Image: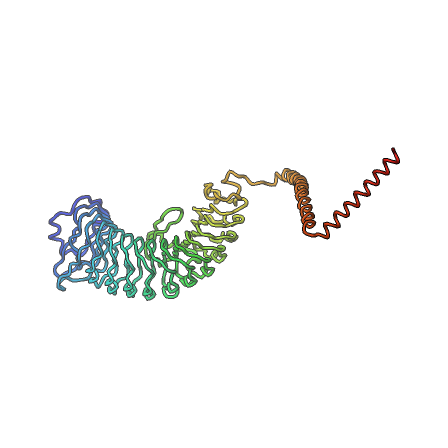
Length: 493
């Protein structure tokens, strides 16, 4: 009955007869009212899976059955608090392995009673309005492989007990209000492949043990926290890493050159083992990658930090990258000449740095590039021409670089046909230079004479013997002049 465009409520009599149903498929319809949870037969029978997601079920959830292998109620309009599991004196079978209540409007805290679901493998409560702290007893659910609590209002420190979930494969705690540091106990999560702690209030340095101990990681998102210090070189040991997002923290120092050891980013083509949906901010927007295309996601985001130094040439060996964002840092030097090696690149953002020099011609070789931002740097020279690069004709791509010229900017570059004109201008500039030299010569002559005269009279004031000698010399000179004048008058008088 899935995808059948059903737009009615579930009849009341259905609850009375559905207790013997093992599987129920009502997903992707327009069904309203209360969801048909269907209480089972006191452990004599159990149901395998109820798919009720993507409807318009509303109101509080009255019952949380545990005699169903999988309960999917995501993407509805359910409200109120999450009810306690229906386990009464060990009479009801507890086989609930998948509980997905994501994308609803549940409020309140995560009930401690969920910790009694000792066969739970996937718990997804993301995209609700839950508050409070994560119950520490969740760390006792030894079967838990995926804990997805993203986009709620949860707060406090992340429980140390989560480090005891030995089979945990996926942990998403992003977009909450968690504080403190990443628990040291997480180093025991050897099977962890997907770790997203982004957009919280976490602090401290990025732990080196992430690279040393969590060797299975394919996704590491720590964006929009308060992490500081340098990027640990140990992250280069994460050879399977496909998504590294450290945006908008307070990281300093240089970009590690050893990132070329992240093998997954150096390989062309898809990765078949990437097992979950991913959202990445690339091409100026948030893009969602689902099971059909998530295997192509290879992204590195280090923007919005205080990183300095040059862009390492070694990054140009990450030929599998689809997105590279180094914007809003203090990077200097030139854009690597061989940036054209990143042939799979679809999004490149180097804006708001201190990069200088020309834009490499090899940039025009990036035929897959759909988003480019080089604005607000100190780049100079002509913008490279290329068949594909010319399709990126938005002038804002290059704005804030006063030394750039050529299309799509209004500022044209001088070409070879202007050679004579340029030569004439050069000669004129030479003549102007000579004239300017003489102006400066005469302008400095008078002050120089005044300074010399002042120094001479200063010596006469403080040197008595020099003063007597000087005025004696002047007196003798004047006497000789008067004698000569008197003789000349007598001779011609």
